[in-house]
Image 1 (tube, one colour):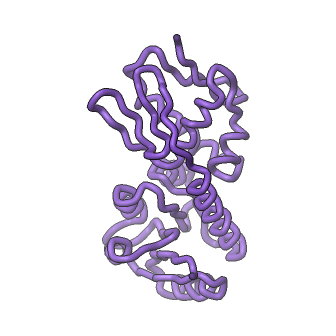
Image 2 (image 1 turned 90 degrees about the vertical axis):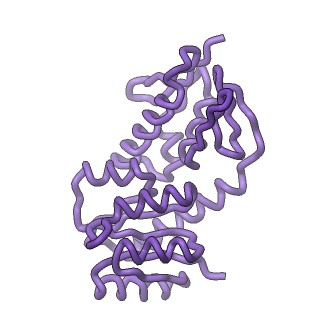
Length: 229
């Protein structure tokens, strides 16, 4: 069965060409020309990955990405844009994007990125094992991707959960940046590194009220999860 791609692109010529190219690579593609249409298509269909243009009328790609992430915390998506500003890329990764492609781009490279992201997603689903970990005053269920304390519960994204699990596996030692980036993001470059920093900041906020747990920076090397006895 062909994997399904939701492509949201407001340029009808570019969108049509990209759709045809993706279909030649054996993907099933649904093309939408604005954010509202893309959101309705996502609500009413099942997809393996989303390709979202950033600059669109009616609803921009960032807003669409947020709404998609609210409905589905696991589906991967890639932003396609003509803008290469670091601030826009940072925002895209904060929302939960898996990658960011700047126009003009090599279509073959995009296909390789899609294959890598989908392969990584399948691997993450396959290797997940039921496990409950104690983190200070919190309980971390790696299968459900929840962090709980009493009646309080936080639902983690797949990347947040995997990063927290890696930190736990390397607790009181060092989780190198390279290992985390290659295992979770599949690449070690400026943009994935900034994305990981955002996720570390999110994890710290979740545990900010627990003084027995902290995530330390090891300058130039990585991160260290410290659990006080």
